[in-house]
Length: 75
Image (cartoon, rainbow, N blue to C red; front, side, top):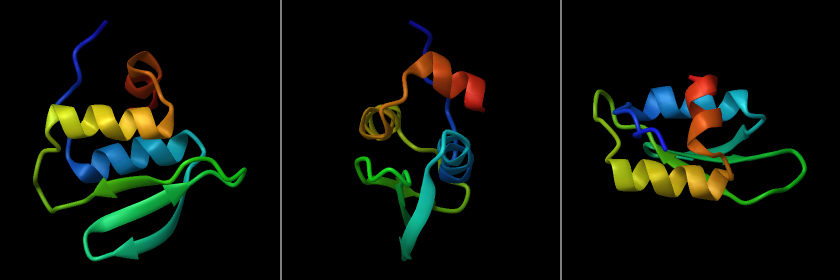
């Protein structure tokens, strides 16, 4: 299994959006995404210039039901 890359919230947001998720709400620095089919809600913190910790990134990918290999392709 490949290691998770160190990414900002903006980079993670764009990769998850490429997988079919749409932003449904923005509250402060947190973006709420959902697929049009009505899947789980995914929350991504987009703090300017800050790297998302690996555990948080792993949790985001689990909620979005994206495996690491697919996520690396979406980047």
